[in-house]
Length: 186
Image 1: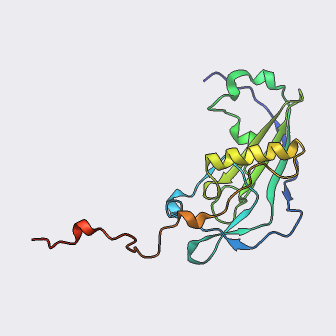
Image 2: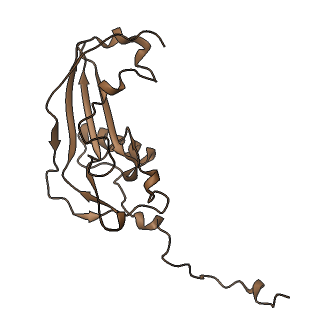
Image 3: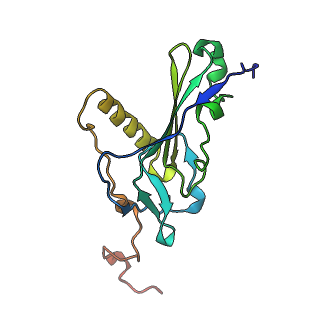
């Protein structure tokens, strides 16, 4: 990798952006696949809630809001050249590790950082817990966000929170009679 240009970033006070209306307090059950401690991890995605662990290690939504941080970089974006392509050596600067934001339990489910460069360009970094959305869900969220920014009152596709459709039944049950197995086995 080529030498990277040293840059300095000034971070403003982290803000908690809260919902404009009271949101429901509820448990969001995971699919049987995602409801495993080993599959819980952070990636650069987004959503609106904070996570807490509830009874029976179920994830609960505590609708406090999202963490938002603004930052200013002392460099023109063009000066960084190809060094901003993956693997980006500036990733830790463009997605600041706010204390407590890198855990699994009790961390902000969504962390958004907007970094302004001296040329007027900007970078947006996201961190979210995979248990609340996958890559396709993130794409849907970004599409909805862009529609709202463009003036829509509601997104054209609303989120669906019917995770119970992905849950295994509590005990297996026979739903179809297989007459081919009615004969005795010798």
